[in-house]
Amino acid sequence: MANSYLTPEMSLTVPVPGSEPGPNWAYDLNSSLTVIDTHTHSAGSGVQITPSGININTDLTFNSLNNAISLRSVRFTAQGSPLSQVYDLGCLYVSGIDLYYNDENGNQIRLTNAGAVNAAPQFVSATFNSSASLIAGSGISASHTSTGEYTLSFTTAFAVTPVAVATGYVLGSAVIAIVSSVTTTGCVVETYLSDSLTNEAFSVIVTG
Image (cartoon, helix red, strand yellow):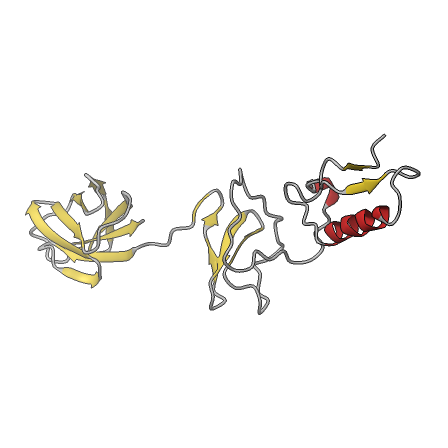
């Protein structure tokens, strides 16, 4: 019979009682205890720990320079309201049903809204008269191509095709305005406005 044997996970030398003479058994035992004292549970240094053996009850640090990798998904616990503590900076989370991001200045940025991307209008609105002159607004320019038709150009191109809505009025009376040929750089507006009416105007609201 052998005087000692090696364990399968950490290769610890274990003396066999009654077989290994002293003081060798003491040397082997001391050597094994030293290995146990420095084991890390990595491959060859103990049995790897499974999630059932972990109880994370405080913040888990990745030492600043390390990443969480090979994740299939990330599941958040919904918060009752946007996070606002002094340490809630540079963090992604869910409040209610929507996704939020707090930047390093503490701004609470809502990323989704009721099942859609929370996109604020890139251009609020612009109003033009019958000669396609800008009355109010910014970010849009226009050219008068024919009676009741205007070609609009966006000063800054959208990343995706936006939604453009047009409304018109003549002396306070609503008229129909139709938006067509919408691209990331512009659109066409057709209205039932007569070029002879100097008070006519139409407004365009563009949402990215």
